[in-house]
Image (cartoon, rainbow over all chains, first blue to last red; front, side, top):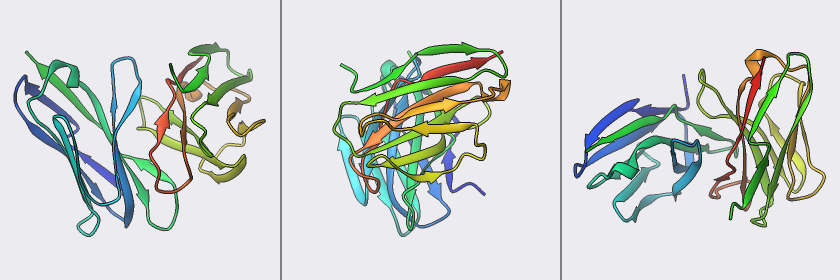
Length: 109
Length: 113
């Protein structure tokens, strides 16, 4: 199976609401990164976590290396949050970074 | 100002031809990578380089050859192009090979006819 399982595959939110995206890992994971890909295709790094939580504005991410998962919380969603969100995991034992299949997030007015 | 420059942005090629995708990074990073994104697969790791040395190659085909003429350059040569090679190819870099934030270029969208 895939090393990185991302859910949901698609999510639609109304402006002002909040939700969470999740990645489950099937092997030991040393670190996780979250990216947003916009409509032009550009990949923007949102967070890098080796453990714990990080917050940036309306976004907050957590990584539990023991339970093998990471989450990305989006609070008070805005139209510009629309895009595809990817998590990427660095496996323990090798430096290869593997991406999840992505969550396509649509924010509606 | 983009710190990772990929050229060209769009590329159309005929089956059987050869193309080179250019990548330069101005972040002072020591590690560089190529990823591929197509409709069929998510972002797929292809190669990693550290200090101009190949560290990992997950590409089954020898038609894909990375070339690093300088520490901040990692080009990708693709020979004998096939329609299945159509994808967006992303170059990325990080300070080091392990446990570092990954930064991406804007990608080269390749279409093989």
